[in-house]
Image 1 (tube, each protein chain N blue to C red):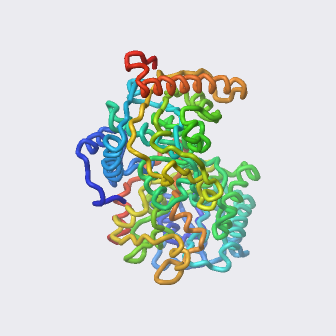
Image 2 (image 1 turned 45 degrees about the vertical axis):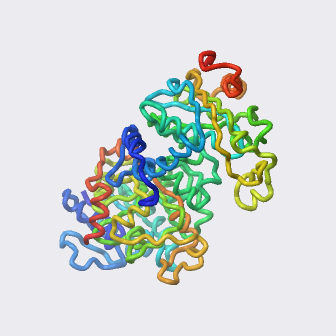
Image 3 (image 1 turned 120 degrees about the vertical axis):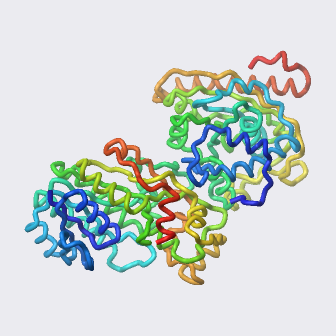
Length: 303
Length: 278
């Protein structure tokens, strides 16, 4: 079975590529970036998913399944074409899957879809609308990409489309939204708030994505690892020092004084939890994480 | 969060250990309850519960010792001391101890400190999805159907009831949970409010600021009466017509009114414990 992975040179993309190989799939990838020293069995086409050469890859490689991971998700560095990559890239992906008879499509989305608010339920289920898309413009493109990908469920019912909403990934690659936030020796927190953070080891995340493929999932699924942990506990367990700051100071200091470069709306994500119910995914696939909360943080800490 | 700030009461620690909760490797349960924070916080709270105030609790056996349940009671003055004392009775007096999840007002989680404390002790903004999930997980939830209108009652009205919301009945029907009515008496004496400053409250992000006889929002040491009534079971799906649900609400409200009346009579020593009909 041939699987095409977009965004394969990203940290999670590589892990997914390797896991697919390990399970005996034929793998090819599309990415603007190279994968230096990648396995010889994986051919990486250095093209942009939105451009014509990417379509040629679909036409000639004729994948049976495709996994879309070519989205820009980090908040720390805002790139100007992020919105275009996320929306037009997702459109191109769905279009090519339809055009070239791909039987299975997986969209690797994020649990931040649900947004963080004082009055939302702790555990989000897949049927909930994205409540904070309007208050967090920097995330709106990812929310829209998620919803756009989900539209393939009714537009192209012949394709088994799975939209996965993965919690933060963490692990030895030290890559991802949470890892970037935990980068420095001192991690600023909003004083008086300590939201639960839901995360999964990056190897478990890769395995979950491949498991979704193996089970031909059709629908929208939250994907999580161990039970969530308060942010201050994550910070301490990662060997960092929490630095609680009053919210006003935090807002004033964003991007200065060693504080992370975050959009103002991201502060809500440091005040309120985004935790998901992944029971539907577990029931459909039997997936169970291998790394518990402590092992996951240690994997990040000791790398 | 409260590391090394508060002393630990060994009796409280033993009670928290006995709670039917699943803690992960960091001592946190799936709802974010932190065992160590809970032990330190309840250790401090136990002093207030046992010595600053004094709570005469009746009918604690009516609260299920395991499994789901909706505790429904009255607000009796100023701020939700009643909620805190009900939580206290379940943690500190009940055998085995239980942790109730209060469905609290949205504004509380918007305040620094309060949000953190509530999150680490399992107190959530009242939300039907949240409540249903907790009940299906066999937890106890604590509901005050009067809401902020209930705490806003002035001292002279402390033993009366204002309008009840109906959500708690639909919740109980949908999850097939028993309702445990309770009446709380004495809040009006602890915190005799004579006025509520609503405009100032709105400016500060709260529904109102209560003003007591002595101006400050500090309750005086008071003895309270807390009466738990027999569990009430209603049959239905939770999707009944409003009129049907309102009738059920009225039955619960009548039970709570009766429990308050008996609590008041006990307080005034007009009856004794043996006369109670819970």
